[in-house]
Length: 240
Image (cartoon, rainbow, N blue to C red; front, side):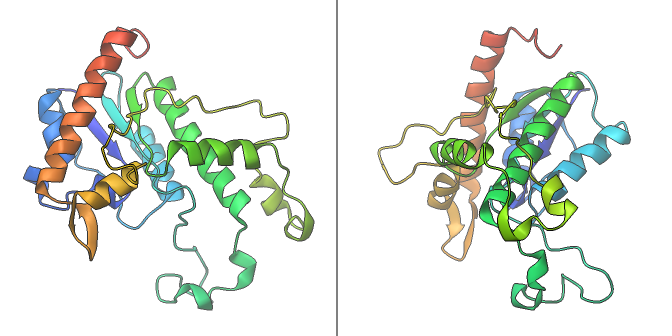
């Protein structure tokens, strides 16, 4: 039986138990088996893309499977990987040397490349893939045009690593068209302009901004309805 693969952060993790998890419910509606690997708590695009790469190399994701692709917040950073000198897991950000800090445009460009690359990898594998983003789409598109054509320069281009992390060249040969994007439903509340705020409005409590039980169900139905529409539009020819 084909599998449903969920990629993302803690918003792609069973916050109300596996039986109420939107991934479990969506897999049932799509007549798929949910892959035992789901979202990675407290992680960003670096770890999520690595998760995808490992699943591909281990042969855990194959043609006929379906993937839901999300790479957390666009400016979210994974905990810095350091050597024995400093352990990132044990020290707060203020104790991490400033040489590891990154400017906003570099962080966004890395997220953008990793998000786009993950989707392209899934397409190349012939995986039926749907993506969604936590940040407002208009904000991402504005940042894409604002930072995408800029070369990293000035005080933080003294080493080759920073130059390599400049992901989109000035000519912008690649623009993410956000194919098969699961859209935020229209809301009577104008302040809810992104999935992050929608999730917050359907969260467990003010101290735990992850989906509650009813939120998981609503989330499932929204995703399922849009997947059905995309399948009708694509006629499944793109993936199968």
